[in-house]
Image 1 (cartoon, rainbow, N blue to C red):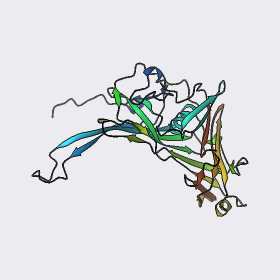
Image 2 (image 1 turned 30 degrees about the vertical axis):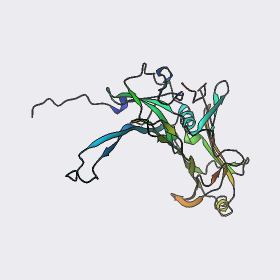
Image 3 (image 1 turned 60 degrees about the vertical axis):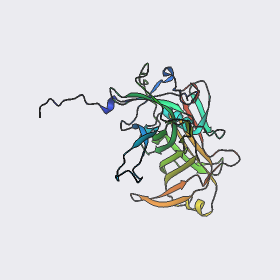
Image 4 (image 1 turned 135 degrees about the vertical axis):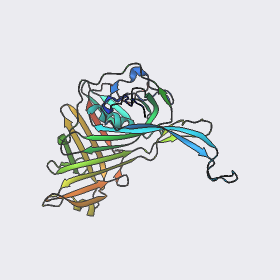
Length: 337
């Protein structure tokens, strides 16, 4: 077979992802290109998809064949996600878009107090620009966070994985100006994280014993569809939100873990990571441990403690999770644009 067979392959390292601190001012309307300012590092295996829902007559009789003879496009939907190492900007970004409320104070560094917004069922929607290949450049519109996983290791950066769902709306082509990457990223390190547990307002740090933590947050977000909307959704609607964690700590000679489960003792748990002037603080004020599973790490006995939305409580309006991120982002996340 005659050649040539060479082609211009596409490098994973050449892909780009651009975010905005702003949420969309309205559903179906992209964040302005001028506000798409954050060129984010990410794992190059990330995938954003444009998916079809289709109808066919495959299961109907009377068409003279067992196979489909007619098919119709009935809906478009967008989805996807990415993962990477957690820097201080991204810590505020993913938590704000998942939880829905951000109040910023300070003169630099800036402190972002992020909490769950229970006043609305509409997710905070944003636009995400993806440059997947030289010729596949698109902006996904109406993207809402479905879930986030934060993993705190003993060494190295804290990692994250975030997933989205959209209404199917997008625009093709490059944004007006591709921003340059930040001069540097301030990573939040697992070695800087202090895990504490104890009575509300009197937690005790477990430095030296804390081995690792995984925190999972979910919004239950879905693409809201209804008759009259054509092939696209109207907006992203939140469902029943969930919070859970699993933390491993080394056992010691005096039991201070199993007794909490046996006695059904209400505790406060928090994780505070201070890397230079950047801080990520995650606090759950009222928690019943749901499991305290015994395990091993080499020749060391460890406890794997865990709780979820059935045992992490909002008592007296204190919230189930309160997040504070200190970084260089001067304005609040989630401003409409």
